[in-house]
Each structure stands twice: as structure tokens, then as C-alpha cells.
Image (tube, rainbow, N blue to C red; front, side):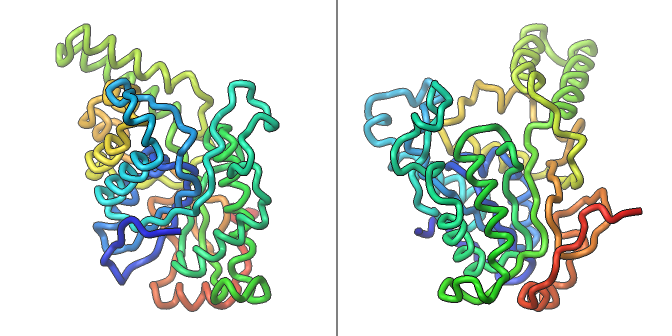
Length: 325
């Protein structure tokens, strides 16, 4: 487990984002993380694997020397993305499981992340939680955002670590007990958002602000996202991060092996995104503080930082995300 970048911020809340592979942090909540950094909070990204089994998805990077040095290349890409976003970074150190064509668990590589014991990996995550002492955790839902075996594993170990980190009886050798106060699922691929973007693009084309070729290209890229299942009904929290979309996109392009600049991530002009849908979406899954839904911030309901620290050290119980009316 090694550092990549370190934020200088010492005040403000602390947010830990747990991700499966390098590049996931830049496609899921990146603008929100950049905004919180600029507002004086600390954000740390915990990347569980090195992305060793990832395919090269950008034709410009599909070269022999990149394939031969993919592990080092992806670590360098992660370092650049972390620097752009301003986040602190840690590697958890597990082997990427890849995505076998068969889709069968028995075809995963020996020793990979998805085949590890959940409790043992959760212990590693607990150590990270007790070290960084986050007030907020960001992770994936039970579907992993999409059902990649490493994403599913991230969900499992995050939820287990949420339960264990604040228990002083659990592995005291891993550090002082610390109970994060809120846990969110990141929902980056909201079909409702892409439908609204498609409407905005169509209006621009009708107004003569786009050529027919630009319009057709953009709609083709949007079709990739619009075909997915919509998670919008699950969203509890929308964070306005429009002014940080450029940072998000710069971090994405830093992962040059994974992100094609002509691909779906950049199918819609950033100005259209800002005007049409300026937020990033999250789902509050667990909380130890009362809050009111819907929220506009991941920090909604948290007491001032000093009091939040004391609360996290006091073994607070969970409270319902949606109290009975």
C-alpha cells in the first residue's frame, strides 16, 4: 500500500472513495471530489487493484510498448489523475480479476481480487479507514455500478468494513476504532440524465447551433448510455459540481489506456452538460447521523468537524436512511 499524492488540506471533512481499478475514480464522482478538495476538505481514493487485466480501450495507446509495460503505465496514469483532482491516493494492492469472456467465476485468474476472502480484504480496508478517519465513504452498490467481479467485491468489502471499523474489539492492531458517519453509493450512469442531455442536444441542432454531423455523432455516443438500466429512482443526493467538470474530464483523459477521447465519455459538450445536468448523483445507503432527503451535499447532516470526530470515535449506532413516517 503506497502513496501517490497527498493533499495539503488539514481542515474540513474527510471523504474516502473506494474503487476497483485506476480510472474508476475519474468516471464516478470525480467532479464532486475535486470540488470538495477546493473547498478545504480532504479526499482520499483507495484503489483496490492495479488494473493489470484491463484491455487497452484507446486505439492511440494500442501499441506493443504499452502492452509490455501496462502495469507501470496504469500506475503513472493513476498518479496523474490523482494530481489533477487533488486527491490523496492509496493502493490496496490486489490483483485485477479481469472480465473473463465466459463470465464464469471459475475462469478468474488465481489469486485475483474477486477470489479473496471478503473478511480478510475488509480488514485491509478497515486499516485504511482507521488511518484516514473518514466521515464519509463512497463506494458501489450491490450491482457494483455494473457487474464486474472486482466492483462486486468492492461493494462487499466496503459494507463489511463499514460494520467493523468502529468496533474497538475488532483487530485493535489495525488502529483506533473509527466509525464513518455516512456511506454512499456513487451512481454515475443515470439514464434520466442522458435522456435530458439528448433532448438538449436535439434542441441545439434544431436551433442551428450544431451541424447535422455533430448532432449524429453526439446522439450515437449517448445511445451507449441510454441503453442501460436507470438508477435515478435510487438517487438521494445530487451534488452541484458543474464548475469541476473540466477537472473530471482532464482526470479521465489522464487514463489514456482506458479512455478514448472520441468515445462515449466525451459525447456531449461540457457546456451542454453544465446547463442541462450540473450535478453528480449518489445514494445514501448507510448513516449514523440523521439527515433529510433529498440532499445536496455528501456532508449534509454532519455536525462540525470536531464534533464529527468525537462522534466517529464513540461507536454511534446506525439510524434509518428513510425514517418511518
